[in-house]
Amino acid sequence: MPHSQESNLKFLSEAMARLTGSLDMQKSLIDTFEFLAEHFPIDAISLHQYSPDLKALKLLFLVQAGRFDFVEMVAPLSEEAANSLFLHNQGVSGVIKVPLNMDSPVSALHSETLSELVPLKERAYMVCVLRSEKEVLGHLCLMGTHPDCFTEEHERKFSLLVTPFALTMSNLLQYQRTMEFQDRLRVERDGLEKDLENLRERRIVGEQGGLKSTMEVVRQLENREVPALIMGETGVGKELIADAIQAISPRKNKPFVKVNCGAIPDSLVDSELFGYEKGAFTGATTSRPGRFEQANGGTLFLDEIGELPLQAQVRLLRVLQNNVVERIGSTKSIEVDVRVIAATNRNLELMLQEGTFREDLYYRLYVFPVQVPPLRERTQDIPELIYLFMKRGCDELGIKSLPQLPEPTVDRLLQYSWPGNVRELENLVKRGLTLYPHGPLLLDKLLPQDEGWYISPEEGQSYFEKTIDARVELMLEKHLAKLNLSPGASQPLQAGLHMQTEIKPLEQTIKEAIVSALAKTGGRINGPGGAAELLDLNPSTLRSKMRKMGLKASEG
Image 1 (cartoon, helix red, strand yellow):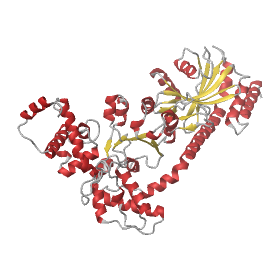
Image 2 (tube, rainbow, N blue to C red):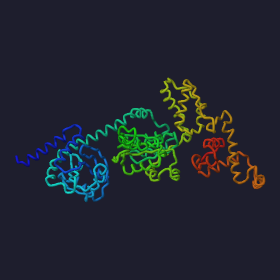
Image 3 (tube, one colour):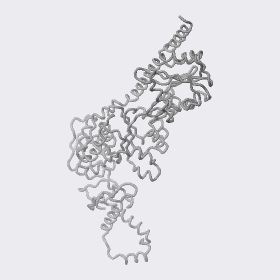
Image 4 (tube, rainbow, N blue to C red):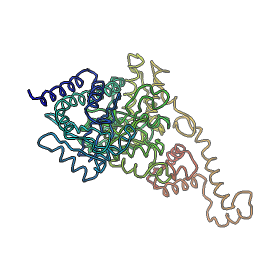
């Protein structure tokens, strides 16, 4: 056997012994680097991939003397550089050996991206493309110690390593994917059984009733992946609508991760959504993937999106635009493929005007809006909802039979304005079952009795009825004062009375004031600029007065 063949065989045998010398892939690659450093003038070995979708380098790992790093960074390429790497990946032979230097845009970008780990300097590169039977595994790169440091002998030896490295890298990448998958499973497992139990019991009451138009809109999303924005007051059931959207989504069998943005302290938003690395802050004893990583391949439900602080909105927008996240304490960019469903009880358009919600994020989310009506606008669903919550509550409390629910109680519940919507009704039923487990279930006795939220037609005037006239009189007095027509200003008041051609009853004046406010707001009662705000009244107070007068919002 010629000496060169003996030398080649010995070199290859020793390299493979180190590559396969340990079940710990990281240790094997560190040992391999130490061996190769005896034969090549190198500072580091890296493996990167070319992503045709992103037109970018995806840096996977870096090996140096005594050190291994999973890098997982993404570096965008120019059109020219992307085309050159695309051609490399399409090479028929499966092996490309290219000596490179810092004049090359690809090697310059590679060095700049890794500059925090490997000193940035002029150096030579030697690269080959590693392939398996199914895919291009990546570009194996030897980072030289200085320019023109690689010779033809180095290139010849490097070519001997392509096949064993390809096999090793195939196993390493498969190992990495398996570990990431197991981490994601561990994170999801904790809440999975509880979520499944809730989903088994949940159904949408009113699908053919008060929510019929909403569900018709939802059904238009079947087998589509566009972002959806669910809007409605607190407690109307926005999460149930999100569940319904997910159930007809192409991603229905993929991860479905839910986040209540309003429940996360501002200081923890980043770590919750994007994750963190071990040691990133005090208490970070282990690395943890964020909710975007947990939802990778599936759907992320961002409830109460309007509660996110502005800085978090900026970072969320960046993720939605680039489909990559960076954990706290890391410069690695991690690709994610996530469909976003958002929900809010806030007026986002008003927040845009106030500068508390970013316009670019709003239009990124406002692709397919779904409006959920409040319970007071779907009162036909209340009896069925009560029955559902009674049955569920009896099961939880161990009550064997459903208590009696008097018909007058139901009638009175239909008159209540339900500011807390379905959630308030559910809690009311639970409280009633606790107090009256054997019935009758007098839920109307548990309703709040202040501010006109509840009017009993059989008990005469409520607290609200006794005070509304005084409040409206106070409101009118304020307006008169603005015109210098208050009772203390006798002359202007007399002049005002002379101008008044007809003295109207106070009740009619109040009614005209309400009708005028409704007309000005287009029938809108709640929110900034609504009729209640114009009249300086609680929205429930205004609705109660309107019911008494037989007024409807549409009459404005």
